[in-house]
Image (cartoon, rainbow, N blue to C red; front, top):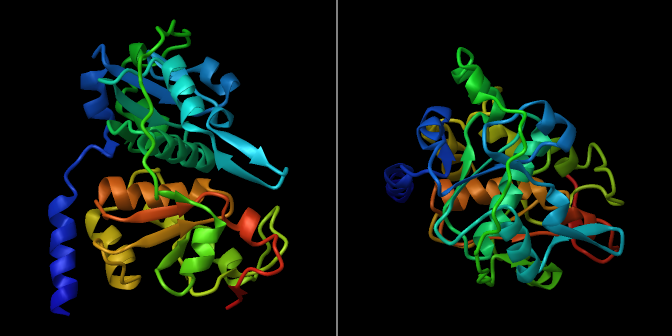
Length: 291
């Protein structure tokens, strides 16, 4: 109990950061020349309206298919090219947001993951997304734009951080040795339902369910520090100082658990299995369980 309380206190004391930025704080930075705003919605929705000076980014620029079965993060060189095309410089501040669809929120965390793993650290996700931006600025029509920004090529240079994004061999070697958290809805975790594109039912042996959506309120704002501590530390008994492995269906959902744990709660060693169940659950010899 004393250790748990110490961990709770430690986590609370570290939460103050810009991993999730409010619409009000973003508005104050909107004219900063170093700000790069990335919108993860589709081009049609983007053209109907977006935050002024935002650029639209397609998640496909950050990932590639393997054997038409699962997706993996692109190489550092490819991520560097994409980041530069988005106008990202070494001294940029990047804010990513979607238009309040679950997939777009997850695209935000995956793009953040891709940038951070490749050495760019100054990344935030807009808390509450575009919906919160519209709500906070409903009296100001200038806070919505339909113009396409002319982007100047950035100078960001990728520096890959190893041992964050891991493959199947690493996961095999660590089953029942490190805590593994699954970000899919619990019905897929238990095997009550089958995930699209995944042959087998259930989850990686020894893993626990940690549905990514449970960390957010209905308006897409992040839940309180107290609730996050309850979920990750009190209920799942995760230790901020020890290794954890996150996975999901195909990388996107797990990227949000990874982002919250590492960037917001400052957990020190969280790895992500990018291929996730679209690789693991389509093989016949990987250890899985149903419950």
